[in-house]
Image 1 (cartoon, rainbow, N blue to C red):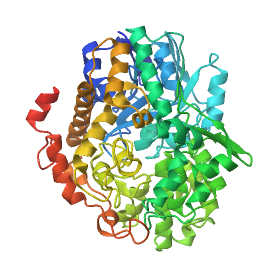
Image 2: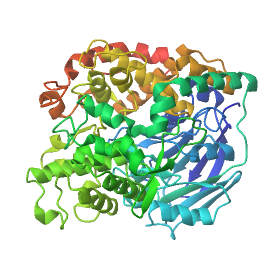
Image 3: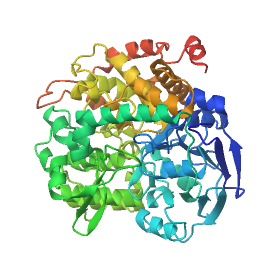
Image 4: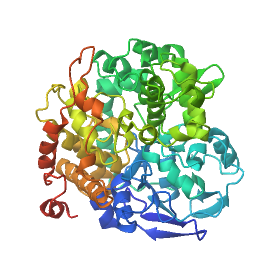
Length: 596
């Protein structure tokens, strides 16, 4: 097989055994790889009503056919399981170098089953597989545990792991790799922790087979030229990282502030990518074969490390009313060390701040660290307490929805399907309203990044206040993203590349002919597969909604003043363009069309 290594590593932690299986080539072609193929395997093997933190659940770590190939940004991997946060199918995407290293070791997917009797880690050196004791690194933060495991591994080995948050089964725990990269969303780190699996250490020396080297070189050149010439991927992201968005989004009045009570932050520029570059940036921190290099490596006082990205800058910054960028960098650092989802961690603290503001959380609960909006020390300290489940941090570790629900006000959690929303207010970006509400893994921006047309004008500018055509835009972007996630390259390439470009890369690498239509149909198939799993798990159309605040409370000030999310007007159209029933269920005709 070209592009694929053709092997699955299945590890049974309960039995302490493993076996290597052949990858089904026809299944791989149909579901692409990464997100799509892992979801198909997972759905075939695991009951939708499984308890996410039970030994019966499985955890799949999957690469795509372009992962490890000499193509732009070909370093992505996905973690697929059932989410303890949402109850939906979870698939969290990460970059860095670990994904490519797994391919070099000769495996497309790792399937982790059962639960170890004590903390362990999996060591992979090409064909040499071992399940080793991890007692000496259990309880350690990510950097310390990574250093310890690398000391016992071959040179250039890469480490994927959980931090204390995953060990303590936090619903918002991430899977970390390469110190500061994260498969962050949906609590996948808690599933790993529930299996007593601390880490997977990988070193590989094999190559990824390419079907047509000359065609690949041509396709790569076309893509590289487009990436370099594009204003976002060629200039904005390389220069200022993802935080280049801070001022852009804030100026449009769609930058959620103080737990979404406002939509513009007066002090946003002090936390922008421009300010980050001027005051704290040490160097760029690119992923494997990435010409964009949006990753940042920053230092403040005695703390340095990867990040922060746009989302944690917002979550710990404007959403908590904090303008101290140094404190935000420190909070992000501890978020990585604890192994927490940076979006959910920061926004859960913001929710706690509103609970404190309104008197639900008392002074006696905060142990000397008031949860006041604007308290820069609080975002650092409460990240640590959340990671360790100390005091009130135990409630925060459950995520904002369950925390707010425990006080009788779940509506103060700005989440969809119990997953915290990211940094764009859908009251003034109507396409994001329908996108947020319908995402298969709960509140998420990277499942259909309609900021591209509605704010950035890519591939064309749309009226962000209008609902016209937004349901169809959401479907197209969701399907397109599902394919990109499955291929093994970074979503950011889509600012510059179209479906025909990905089809060209796939055709050259795998030897299977792909067209732009094939790309979108594969994405449609993957999206529907996820939806069917969620329906079987009890996640029906009643959860395709938004927080009450966004549906009923107009934005009070700024360029987007007076707007609410007009979801009820778009949702029926969305179901129709998807070929689903009015209740949001894929029809038999739709399933037959997609071969499901």
